[in-house]
Length: 185
Figure 1 (cartoon, one colour):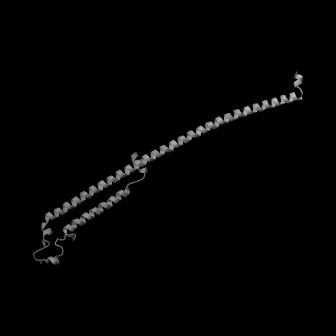
Figure 2 (figure 1 turned 90 degrees about the vertical axis):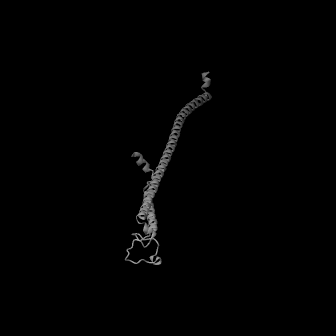
Figure 3 (figure 1 turned 180 degrees about the horizontal axis):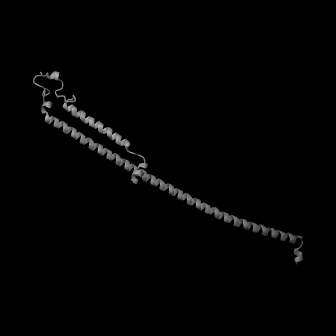
């Protein structure tokens, strides 16, 4: 019986069986290799996805922090500007009240100056007619009638406070780095 298998057909069958067995072993090795490689690629894919998710989370966190810093900066700048506006308005009102009180005091000290344009001149000097005298109000030391002097003083105060307000507003640092420097103080 073994002799029958040893003929050329039997030998061809054995050779073919051995070849198929070797090919099966090679295929099994290749399958094992690619399964292992696939597991490695899958692990790399998951690591890449995790890194991507971490990056997205970090960017979102940084964007949230930047928005919070911007909001803090906006609040800080608005507060500084409100403070400047309030200080300027208070100083303006204080100076205006003082100037008006000073003008009222001058009128109380010299009531004739507002009522009689010719008052305060010596008797040896002839007075001018109302037409020649010009304005019916007496000119003060600066050459302006009392009511116009007060208006000029009020306008000068207003311009001075406006200049100071513009300088103060221009000095406000609108940059976000100012928040960090103020927070560190």
